[in-house]
Image (cartoon, rainbow, N blue to C red; front, side, top):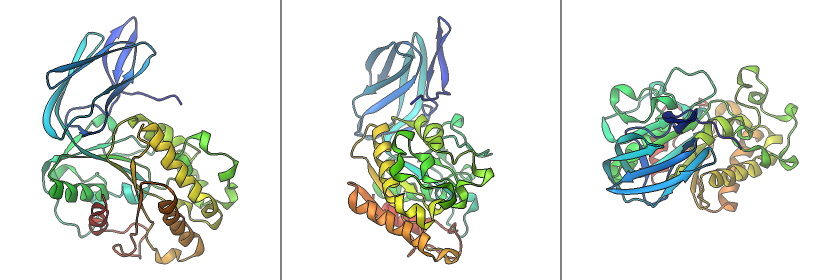
Length: 344
């Protein structure tokens, strides 16, 4: 699968740009105690210097990945990278626990949209990066890099992700990284690579949720498009866990017949792309919703529970006991975040 890089240009040789993927910026958090990977595009010699030790690699294929040994918790540090003779320094880098917070609108739901939540406190040990969405969006983009948690700047951050990070940082006392990878009104097929969308999981368009066919959602709901455009650019980063909150846009009875298989395929394919066969997944069960007290909605909830039983290293979090039921987007994410944190 071709991977698109929109990273910073670090050197030019023979008209070939050496680029580092956009996730690599000042203030970032790498996952501790897992492989440390850098990647980008271009051919040439690459070196990475960390803790006075230099690692080198020659890359000849145009797209490159360099893997270093795992690192212990700590920071901040600087990392020196040299690509074909051109140097750059990543500053204020930390090693902690990094969570990939992914899914659709309930994961995308922002601090600015939240009602009744406590004030967010500045915390330089919580950092946030968001992968680009296809939908036009005036908030943070991947090109903006990693951001440090400051009260006046977190309005566009994922509310659920930030509250999880607050709980985790307070209790674990480590640096916490959040990587947002979401798109409101997205269907699960858009997050899965094409090679896994075979006949066994096919459902006719007439049987699918209306979000699959609405023209205004078509840009991001074709098969595999979000896997390619939003997920792949952040691979193969190392994560502590994936927190997945999606399903509202697949709540027809017909879709529930294949949703268990689709969610299982998503978990397998993401672990494959992230090079971590045992990567933990936390699946948030879609909340009860008064306007959708029907078999399609309940069937997707059952599918999510089933995946927790048949796929290894998957935890299912029930949300209906900590979220209000009168809105498809529960307006306060703090209690759900605390429940998720207790299972991490």
